[in-house]
Image (tube, rainbow, N blue to C red; front, side, top):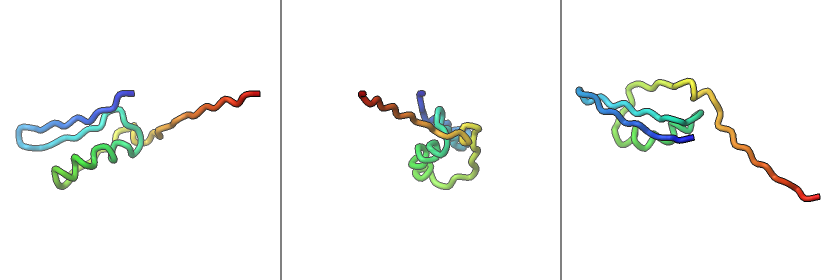
Length: 64
């Protein structure tokens, strides 16, 4: 899974920050430093991926 942060600056100075490839709240954590550097967040849209959880799987083999 490739994750990236896309920042688009519009012609009137509006800024769009989009996290791509993130699940759950990890997107907000990843983009927080950019949001804080730019100032006040006026609008936030949560994509369907926000409802998904990030799962990890650990597998361990025990010798007999």
